[in-house]
Image 1 (tube, one colour):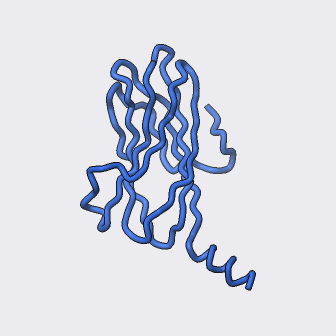
Image 2 (cartoon, rainbow, N blue to C red; image 1 turned 90 degrees about the vertical axis):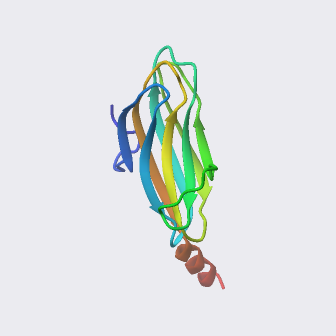
Length: 133
């Protein structure tokens, strides 16, 4: 399947997440970031009736993560179809974000998962503010 973002490579690709499974998609260092736009794309099984969720957890040190979700993106089920959703996430001043994708369906695998990340750096906003004064 051809990526919808021609010229941009996904941050991560996951071939499949088993029924009720999760995939750890890595860490994002929050230093110098202001916001991050995360996009998730996946294919639901033709018989699937349950959503998938991209969950974001915060850690001040990259090792000890909160047990409460910092933010999340729900990918609404569309049985047998490719579904995509993007959301702009405010980023803490420091620390790390861990991204986990959860297949909330107990019967069928989620396939062809791609995640993209676009960032807004703090210093860019400062440059823009200083340029307008």
